[in-house]
Image (cartoon, rainbow, N blue to C red; front, top):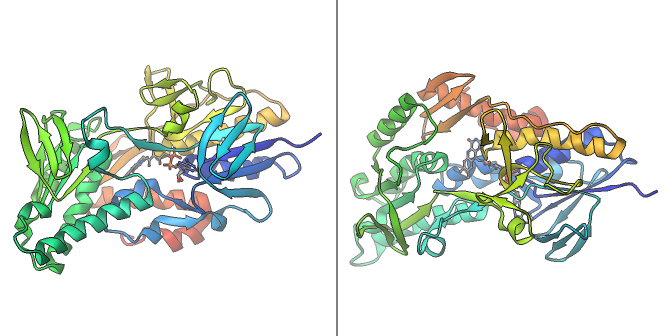
Length: 401
Ligand code: FAD
């Protein structure tokens, strides 16, 4: 009897935590564990807006997978790109080969959703991976440098236009207030010439946040130079800006879209049933009709039956799902009941750049520095769970303690 092979796709929050739990729940003779990821490093998706704004060194945001998971003796790490899941043949097609599985965990994360807005996919940057985020900052700086060095360039080059004022869009413009200040100093440009404009179709920013928090966030960001255009529909995205409303053009040197995410498109292309961009998943986190495929994190559409709405696509949810998935995989292997997943929302904190943040934690509203400290606690807690105190010291955010 060969031992079963558990294949985990994607080393994000869901994939890393599932792999880690599996190494604790299953002995080497009980199961082979394979982790497939595009890179040999794991990155913190929740910090990518800082990479995109240039306020953090990208090396703080990523770590070698082998530093936190035993890839020598316990987990077979395959660095490759997943192209397709042939679910009826229990095979994953990779760029450089094929891989058979007995149990599959899919944690391939999100991609930008542009809702068919003309030109958005082609012309706007997206905060999606380490590389795509670095490109954004490099582009912003290049535009500042061009403005300074080329004859006849317009001030529009210094404008950064951000579509979408959800969590990512707001955290990003917050960071931009810091980096734009520094870039203006570096290139001897008066601060007022550089603009940060956020465009949002909804009447207000940060949907889902309490009104007091939204008001605080908006005025804090406005005070540091962010311009908001709420209630403004983006009709088209061009290389040099948005066309909004009745045809008004907002010109910019850098255009970034943060307005929507959906599951990695590999899943839809592999024939999984999609609900609003994500894969419909049973409450035990398995794809309907497949006893051996678990879909987690931003790829999954899991219903919160009590409130009749899906659980949110966030890191907290992805990590909690990893617990349930690992337990259920162990049950599949040595027999036992399947657990139903239930998300326990511990709160959400959004950083607004510098020492500013807002959030709700255990039903308490937090503003400013206390919120920022809490944000760092949350970030460091994840590092602790993944790699203990050593990883917190190496990669953590320790500045506000
Ligand atoms: P990810 O963490 O995105 O991991 C997916 C992994 O799959 C990556 O390692 C990627 O390299 C790999 N991969 C992708 N495609 C392939 C392929 N074809 N082949 C091989 N490997 C592949 N959530 C919060 O809870 N709190 C926050 O404060 C917060 N802030 C955020 C800020 C930003 C800027 C963004 C973008 C998101 C934020 N989120 C936050 C949401 C959170 O990051 C996601 O919900 C979370 O990352 C989902 O985890 P995941 O494991 O599903 O995917």
